[in-house]
Image (cartoon, rainbow, N blue to C red; front, side):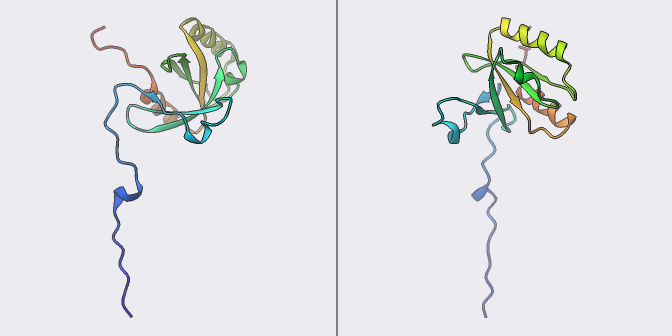
Length: 137
């Protein structure tokens, strides 16, 4: 009986690594494109990593009720203007001040990423997604 041999081709199933980005960019979920209300989206960080998030209007306080989440303040032009960790117990006063300040800065939505497993994962996501200051400043 002849033995079967299979050759593993790593890029056959894996996405090719994207070139490093200078800024995070939104990559809306194709599976949610037909929905009348946009409840979920995804962001591609500068590293190429993908972050799925729930979408809330900036004035919706429910967006601030999640613990251990990454919060992204997003403008109508689909730019992240601020990002933060909600913390382990969501300090309401601090989160409400943040919500008001990002709304004043032009944010129209808060995107909530809940899939970061621990504090280190949330910090890594924040560093990957947060807007970068210009080096010339």
